[in-house]
Amino acid sequence: MLVKQISVFLENKIGRLAEITELLGQNKINIRALAIADTTEFGILRLIVDNPEKAQEVLEDRGFAAKQTDVIVVKVADKPGGLAGILKELKKSDLNVEYLYAFVKQSGENALVVFRIENTSEAIKVLQGMGVEIISPEEIYSL
View 1 (spheres, rainbow, N blue to C red):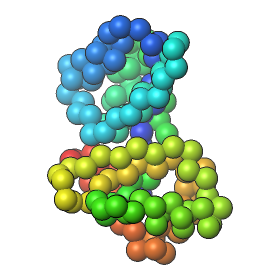
View 2: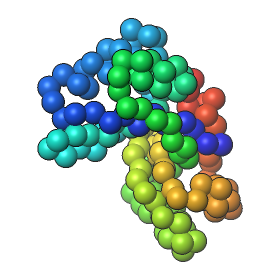
View 3: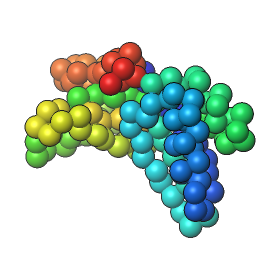
View 4: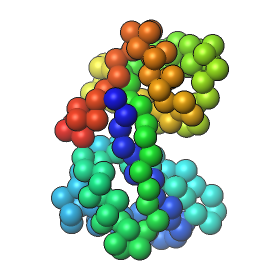
């Protein structure tokens, strides 16, 4: 149920993101989703890739600070308010969403939302109780 996300610390300077994406491409690692949070000095790049173990190894070998984090990926109706219902239930269950990001495979289909939640096992129970479809790591990595 838990998907491995790669988080990479990188300096906020020209070419660093290009360097990472080129390195992954040269090593036949396909990016499935990504998000970046930045400040003026540095950023945290969060990646879902088709081979997280290899990605971490390749990035660390090149000197990048990279680590794996467990996240939950769910299908959310691609319509107004689709995400709100899930967030409302997580709030009612006292589950803190540390961050999230989303992507859509094709317009009109379900969005895929990546959640980082403090208590992942409890979050999975709540989501399953709501009938929310949780995407397996194998499904995400093979997109």
